[in-house]
Length: 252
Image (tube, rainbow, N blue to C red):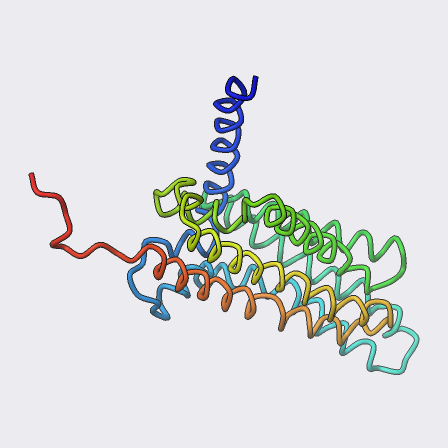
């Protein structure tokens, strides 16, 4: 019976890995996969260029700045306006970015997902009357990613191995190499550490009600750490799968 099930299991694993790889192809690591050198231009492109950076940073920034300004004004009207104004600014800029992508017909899925996330976070904060809940969805996402990464390591199929293997055209062949499996486990552990570090630093600020500090820390631990880890992942990928030299091409 075991022999009969193996092809099915392998097929299911391949299908899952290919799905993960297709999703990763749209990420920063996927954008860097074809590069031969870690140039600033390549990394900038991997982050989505000017538009991608703005879409990532501005919603959080446009929440943080008005909220900080209004809550610093010791007047009842300012305290009451702080949350709706800051949340409204955050949602408004996300709507603008989404409309621009829809009009220009460029990768609308990511923009729409971002808008839904920003809007859902704003609604949650307004309904609960707690501005800090604007960050609650982000905690859940980090926890979900962290759990998925941890499970992949525990079952011996490190997520970064699946992603990199298919991005580099190696499929799951890397699992046959003990050294490659170890590298993929360590690299996947680095991503787990990122999600765990975000939660470990930000959750205490959330429970302490330090909304401004939480907003600042979230921005600092967002794109900068993500970009750094994408670069590290790229360097590891190139060490495991070095680019072929011109004289290594097969003869006709």
